[in-house]
Length: 419
Image (cartoon, rainbow, N blue to C red; front, side):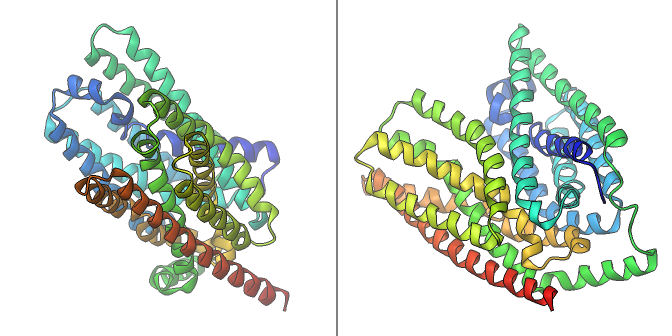
């Protein structure tokens, strides 16, 4: 679908805002943990169970998300996701019982992933050519961070106005519901119907049926899984543990560590999204760009290990690593075309890829926690973190290999198109 530059930018902003806000309400405990406990009158264990319900439905939602993206209209799925998230959040704001809260977070998983994730990726991919994919996905990731930051600070300001935590928390939820309602209207009136130019229904249905059965066995799908899993594992580890590494190994103050975490979580995410996408599109092949980013990641991880006694330099290197892993996260979905995933198979392919490649959400924390527990058990906290750095170095090397394979695939596909 051809869109002029202004229209395309507007659509990109809308889609990115939805992608940002869709995960803000379900994960509101990250910003308002104590207020949530007090307002809902639940325990830490109960909150953990609620969070687990959301995580479970998140993971199992990736695969059906791909199927839905191929079987149903993309714009309608985006509208359904926004409307459902709005209604679920309004229900949430009534402070229902514990069982209802579990159901609410299960529904969040369904509508923030199952009906949204693959349609979102499919819509972004439809906004530009293969040469623009890095820029589009990178900018989208940056805009997601901005939208989350703006709404989060609005919620923070609203929370401070009210005398009780319960009243403030209810208003925070209602603000999120209003944002979903606004986004619904924007999708209806400003986002185009990406599927209106589809081929004849019977032919399209046959292609979809074939893609559903065959995408799982295609080498292009598994190549994407390889690249994305390497990048996401690095991001997941660095994002989750570099803050505590600075506190417990480099011995910086908790206040400075929190400041650095804000820089990593907001400023670097935005900068990496914008600049990373532009840089990635400068390479003749996405695989070549991935190769260099993974290589730089391996070098920086090794440098962090070697400079742990030089606090200022080591802290700076953790910020460099944060930039690199966010470049990977913001651009790895741009590799679909180079890997050989057809545009018409984007939905089902991204569902399968997400279902497998994003499993680091399940295994990274348990593995790293074992490393840290092992070091603490021996009375050497730094040993556990060094094991973590070794883990990241291995995944960086695997990422380098994935970049090489991706470049070779891209060269092969380009040669076939020229013949």
